[in-house]
Each structure stands twice: as C-alpha cells, then as structure tokens.
Image 1 (cartoon, rainbow, N blue to C red):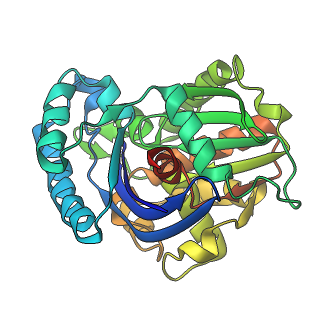
Image 2 (cartoon, rainbow, N blue to C red):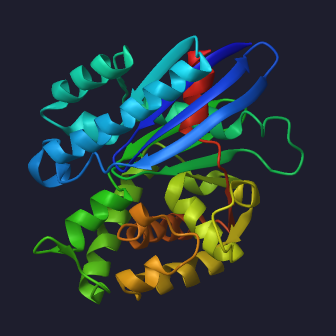
Length: 313
C-alpha cells in the first residue's frame, strides 16, 4: 500500500483526499477527505485573471491541507488544477504559491486529462458490476467546465466544454455584482442556449445518447441527489450510488430556478458555497439528461479526486 495525497483544485472548490492505495490489488482505504469552497474562478470568465482575494482563499486552504498531509505522513502528493487555472493569464502566481506551501507544483491538466481522471475515479468500483449496463457516460459538472466521457472498462471518447455552474451564473445571472433572484425567463433561456451549444460541441466527439448508464459526479449532482432524497443533512453514504429520475431532476431544477437566495439557503443539505450557483448547475444536468434520453442518473461520490489518488499511486 502507498499512502498518497490527492488535491483537486477547480473553479469553485479545492478538495483533499488522503488514502492508502494498492494499484496491483485495487485496495483503497480512505483516511481523510475534505472540501473547501474557495471560488478560485471568481471573475475569470470576465477578466481572464485570478482575483487576489480568490488566490488568498485558495492558499489558506492549501496551508490547512499541508498540515493534514504532514500529520498523516503521505508519501506522494499530486495536485491537479483544472478549468480556472487553465484560463487565467496570471496562473504563474497560483503555481508559485502552491509550490511554496505544499512543496509540489500543481499539474494544470487539459480537459481530456480531466475527463480521464474523472472516469477512472467514478468507474473503478463499477467495473465488473452486474447491475449497471455498459457503456457508461460519466459526466462531471464543475464550476467552469463539464467533462463528458463514454467508456466501458476504458475510455472510448471524451470531451470537456466550458459550461459549469459558476461560469453560467457569472455570465448570465449576475447584475451589478449581485445574483438575480429568481432569474428572469430570458436569463434562463440564455443559459439554456449556452448549454445546448456546448452539448452540440460535446456530441462531435462523445456519442452522448449511446450510453446505457449515466453516472453523474461533483457537487451539483450530489446536491440535487441530496434534495431528491430529502436529506436533513448532507450524507455521502446515502448519496453514493443513489439514482435520481429525469422527472425528479426536472422538478428540482424548476424549483431552484424559481427560488430566492434565502429559499435555497434553507434547503437542509445545501452547502453555503453552492447557494448562488446550484440552479445553473442543475440546468446543465437536466439539459444533458434530456439530450441523452437518460431515464435516471446514477450519482457517484467518487470522482476526479479518487482518479488523482489512483494516478499518484
């Protein structure tokens, strides 16, 4: 067994997983998993740069993670950075800061690499499963981008497109620095148009409608699942491998789009960092399910973070 630390730094959140991993046997023992909403991608779609306050929040989380990694004695660390740091002109400031704090340089991966890691993290435990049909369509709805991967025991096609819950919210739902609550029909229609155009791009590479099982990853999907399950608090075990029908996703999306900040904040399982972006993310999920003809989404708590840990080992 090799003790590894995996860090996934995306547009909205930064997450840590420390685990004992044996690639030869497939054994995987989780020791620590945590997440902080740092909104690294704040304003990137508009300015093309990482904001100083966003970098400060991210570096603060890195200090916390460095202490946890040292305490658990991880032998290897892999830090993967995704959409926001790919897009930013001043990404070198981000790289230097991470290197100073954690002693490793963040790997700024491509969308295709992100898709591969997400697929590995979500499907390693599904390979050989007799209750889910192949091929799988793994969809990772992030803050800045969404990854689409079709595969069975390995990846057959993958594509990353620039639709994410933060990017769609900042592009269409922010007026004079504040999120419009609830959004007007024309703003919702503008988000949907962007999503549909991105799905057209994804379908040039990934046969979305050919998959037998849709597997959904990341905070938007797990939050929608928590709402569908009626959870009084976020429960990873209850959410992992739960199934949510397209009809239920539609109901929840319509509810979120019609709600105010206060109404979304009152949802028991809602993380404070997702209150303003969850409606846009849910609309991405719904549009995808309708395009794919998916009757349900299988929700996975195992995602790119787990894929990073496997790759580190």
